Image 1 (cartoon, rainbow, N blue to C red):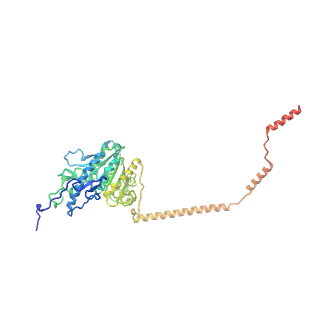
Image 2 (cartoon, rainbow, N blue to C red):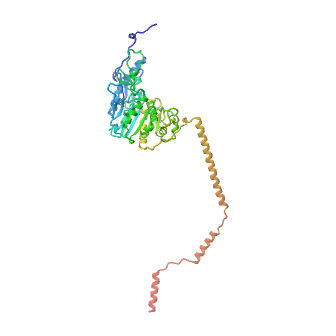
Image 3 (cartoon, rainbow, N blue to C red):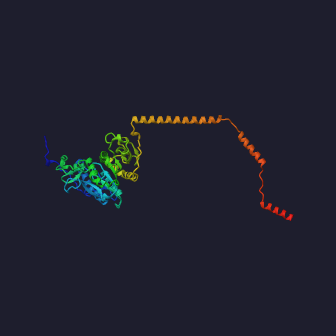
Length: 440
């Protein structure tokens, strides 16, 4: 049996954390392009050894992360570390909170995917524009260019929940797998309790902590209104938490938008309470909407109400769920603005053909047939009533004497009482005077 010694194994590949050193640059359209071929973007497969590809990709991502965070800070965001009140060297996870959020009457909370870094929608979208593939454009739209509006923003970090002891920072699973190894052929590092972040062990705990410890202190009585944008598992965690504590949050939640919804009516939503207008299930049906993968134009109605409990719409993205937010966040904000301005606004349930099973189709067909029969019966009854009325009119005795008598009376009256011509009164007086003069 042959055994390789460690010194005989190839070393773990390393790459410079520098775009130029990696052969890339940022063009005037904020896109990452190859120096040798400016028309081409990031290329994942640079070697037959996949370890090279993983390390090369992580080096590119390491260049992008600080650029995104710096732009978000310039747009009005601040980094807050959880758990709150932690010491500088403690095990923490960063999130982004807008400045002066305590004085805002409206707060938007974003809960993203567990696979993405803080403030980044998708790296595959980043390469089409750093602002496009990150939260920079959304932050500017929410907070305003001058950061003078009455809206606050919280961006949770459902991805970076693994503490990397060597670099003393929270990382994603992808970064964890790309962390340095003594030798390239060694397996991934083993996780232990040292890699867990207190109260933020996974994306479910993290979202709960954000709501309880970060968001709740900023709720200012019943004046504060909260909007939620959730992506995949981040949205699922928010939905589950709100359903469990809906009696607490119901006065404050204005609307929910989900990308790639994960909640189901079979296991996550209590469909038995949908008839109660104050229940969370009813709220999901009336003031929540989801955006799903579809090649149809953005905002086109899609099937999914029976599965997810809310109306579903096309995101305009047909391949990758992580690209839904870059494609649809503007549409989401417009709808959330509508809900915020009109607290009584409610979605109309829209069922597509794919939302219906065989039993529902049969019931709808039976209802349609019953409705058609009722309509035909009412039309027949109305027709019979019209025919009966016409028959009664035809059977009534004809009596023209009164009309003829009236005409005759009018003629007689005209003969007996001819119309007199108008007489000039002054002329009659003159005649009288003449008579009097002659008498004298």
